[in-house]
Length: 175
Image (cartoon, rainbow, N blue to C red; front, side, top):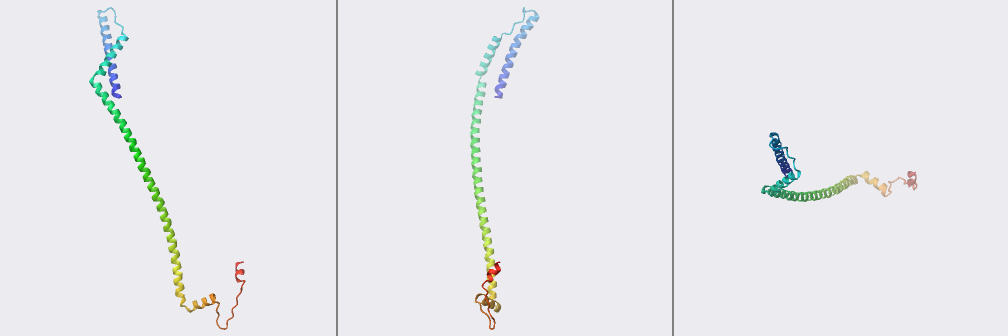
């Protein structure tokens, strides 16, 4: 586009300079006295000269080469645009795919962390239960523990003791 503008500008300058040269030569001739008066620039003549020059430029092989080159560049730009838009689409699809993978992996990690926390709570509970049972097992062979269990569970008493059972005991404690 810039080259075409330059060519048009060069053409305009050369056409103007030709007309100006002709006018100057007429003016100089009038000044010397060769002509009676300077000639007036004929617009139609200038337009004809301009058309002829433009036709010469259009017919020149240099202009044709430039035009072919410009057309080739335009088609290359169009191909690049379609290639670039295809590239952008591919990049967008890859980005969406990666985002989906990250989201799925994140949700999976979250569920695994929840399962791990639940397993840790179960482990703590089972450990506490095991410690309590180990302590109870160690106390089973202790005569005081055996006596306490016999009194509580079996309501046994020693000789000479009197067992009193109060049935409203539970109700009184809850008030």
